[in-house]
Image (cartoon, rainbow, N blue to C red):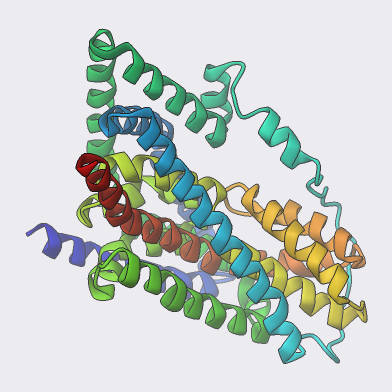
Length: 409
């Protein structure tokens, strides 16, 4: 019954996504008076999802770390997760740089460049991120929505609970209760996901219009094809070969999260739905509680593909030569910048501005990039969420094998 209900919800989300896209395209003029109401429903839906992100992440991670049972195993799960995400992000950046270069994308294209006052993400901000991992004020970390600081604080509290032992039992009971309450609230919100996705995608399409959809259609279409191939080959291979899970079961189980990510363009807002999908795929809370929030924060494979595609496209269109040395710098910079890109709509704009400066592109390319950023965001967010879930499914097997080896020794 649960799988049948999940299947109906997936179909409903897909219908809401398709109808919202069509409605958004035809809304200007005749139905534009409905836009405030649609934006209101979209905002309420997004706020309802975001409302439970941080309580769910914190409590689920604390309970998960305690459930792992040892500090060393917690470190192994975290190390495996980070290694997976950094490796796949490097691969995605490499693919995004060299494939459009081989295809000659942007060569002979003439584009109008408009100045855009977008402040680039400073490259030194990565060092600031590392320096500020431990929150001086945990309450401010929750209030400001700093996911990395919340993750680190939750891991510290969870490890402390392991060290304290039985004396931490009352706190853990509260954390377990809040975790269950969060899951129940998210389960209710999920029933309204089709309506929320409809309104979210309708407002996006209305803002961009058919003209924006037609502009740069070729590069966006190829980019989506590459992202799809990346999902099927890389993530599908990880799920099948490492996780030993059938692709039909995996993609069927994660479809609600994928469609929500496509409609909302936010991996952070999709996190509660991703958690529920992972639970239904049998991923233990000890793994999903750490892997999924980390993924929503640092797994930006598709953002790397999108930014690399656009860098090569604009370089060819503007006559900027990218030699192998500069490509290597762009590759490393893209990997680091994409890892630091926030999992929210439009989060890649400032990172792309920094990458464009590193590649020596004229500042006017930002006006063109911004016009198609939302289209790039839709596919990229969907791809990233699938990558988070593929990691969790794979670690379901690798962590279990490590535990057996530990017990055997």
